[in-house]
Picture 1 (cartoon, rainbow, N blue to C red):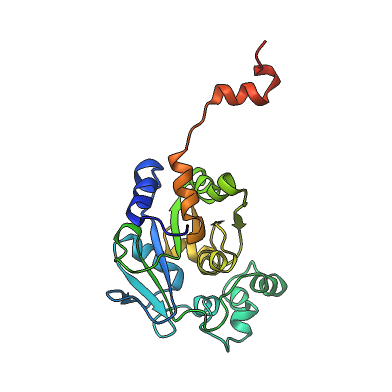
Picture 2 (tube, rainbow, N blue to C red):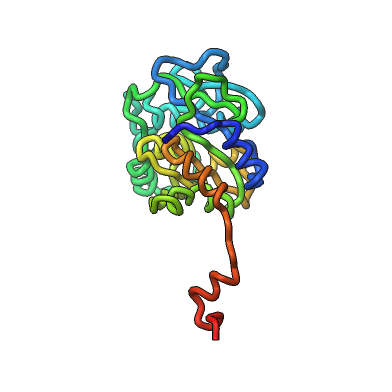
Amino acid sequence: MTTVDAKYLNELLVDRMKVKRRPVALTYCTDGPPPGYEPVNVVACAIVREAESGRKIYVDASHHDCWVGQHHLGWLPDAGKLITEGEYLTMAQGFFTPEGARRNKAQTTSLPTGTIRALAAAPLDEVPDGVPIDVLVCVTDPMRVMQIAGAASAREGTFPIGEVGPSACASLFATPWLTKNSVFATGDGGGRMHNRVGPTDMFVAIPREHFRYLVELVENFRIDPEQMRALIMPSHAPA
């Protein structure tokens, strides 16, 4: 089962888990954006914050404001070394070496060219009927990120992927889609800036294949600290 009620999932995240910011639903559009979604000329990663504000929006090959996002979403097949080898990282910043930048981009995931025609985003609880939700993204504190990203680990034993270093657009949009696995990420400096992510918060991205595990985690959430200590700590074992 990969389909869950979006409003119920939003309720669990907001009312039960108390995430800091509004959950966002991403739709990977193979035939163009859904009806009612408006184009935005922003850096790709910023669609998270735009959707948090209540907008239904999309970026595509014609509507965007970042060549890096275009590259990682598969819309820049002829990207040169400026992007593909990370030369841009060394030209306006002093802390990347050419080798560090090249290896950074080489290890960063990208959607294959032509995988999607648009990437759409909306508040999770306002996705129109009939519009599929492919990935859920949320910005919140590390404790809740751990629980959300780790839902599949608790329910079926699949560890989530942790990313520190890649561009936020790759970690949030490419990695969960390609791996069908949950991702927790710091995001890069630009991704954090454009989404106004505070110093104590992180991103978490959940593919639709793991939605049900998140529901099951919250519905079955129970911790008995005394029993846990008695089970695993000799100093707390019954006499």
